Length: 121
Image 1 (tube, rainbow, N blue to C red):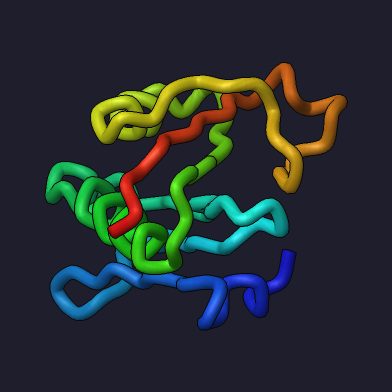
Image 2 (cartoon, rainbow, N blue to C red):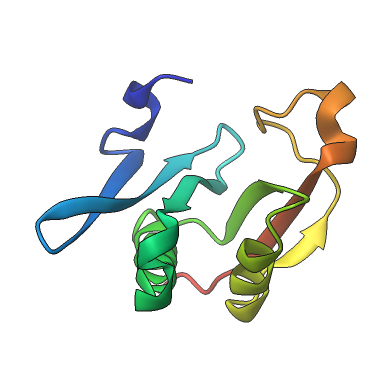
């Protein structure tokens, strides 16, 4: 996947900064089926206590709503337990692998797939 997939009008790439340096990243893209997918969420370990991931996720959810989608999906590695907790706290629930995910079938056992329905204004 290239960065072009995260360009407007169908995508978004966030870079979080703290004390003048990059500490987090997150991206959003629209999938061909009309849903949105959150990708590339990461915050450096020393900045995780600052709730940067929470704020980035909230921003990405709001932008997905702006895109007019009613379903947001994401995938995450099974070992990323703290990320799972964050996603669940924002209403994401586990689901089977979805069409459009970059995760190939032979790796599905190492990943979790989530989705959340949202109200479009």
